[in-house]
Amino acid sequence: MHQLSATGNPWLDPAIDAIGSTNVYVDHQVKGWQSLQEELSGSVPSNVVVVVLPDAAHENIPYDSYIVDKLSDAASQPTVIVAVGKDLAAKSSVVDDALKIANENDAKAATDLKGGLLETVQEISAEIPAGSGSPGTGGADVLMPVVIGGVVLIAAAGTAIGLLARRRRRA
Image 1 (cartoon, rainbow, N blue to C red):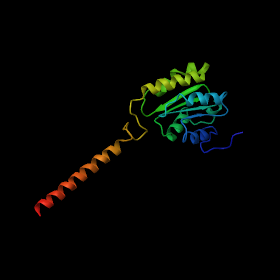
Image 2 (cartoon, rainbow, N blue to C red):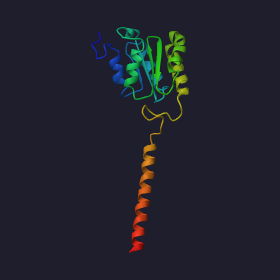
Image 3 (cartoon, helix red, strand yellow):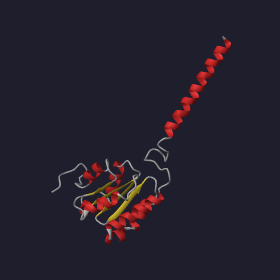
Image 4 (cartoon, rainbow, N blue to C red):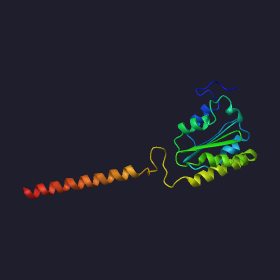
């Protein structure tokens, strides 16, 4: 039996906790969860989160996209793909058609959950723009602040050396 949770959905809180340290979470009540977790872990890129919950997770939700919204808010990655039972959903800050792609793969997931999820991951990953960072970076490379800081330091050092040389010439 599940305990009460902050979200009112006993499957959602463990998923939110898990995606803080991994980008693939499969609930233990999902049939074949261990093999599915292993298969997905080797196939999901680091900028995508995949969460698989049992069909019962649909119960007690205030609106249809509640689960994907909550997981997306909690994830540090820009793209979240969720399977609740055999129903796929997705949300992405860098791929506008993520939900459409997930919905198109619902039929495959209904007969082959792993295949439907992997196809969704591949199709959405192919749409992610190159160099997309995590939310808030605007797609900027993580090293860009270091490069800019280095240029500023070199410019400051060059200015200081120039000013010191000018003082010595005047003296």
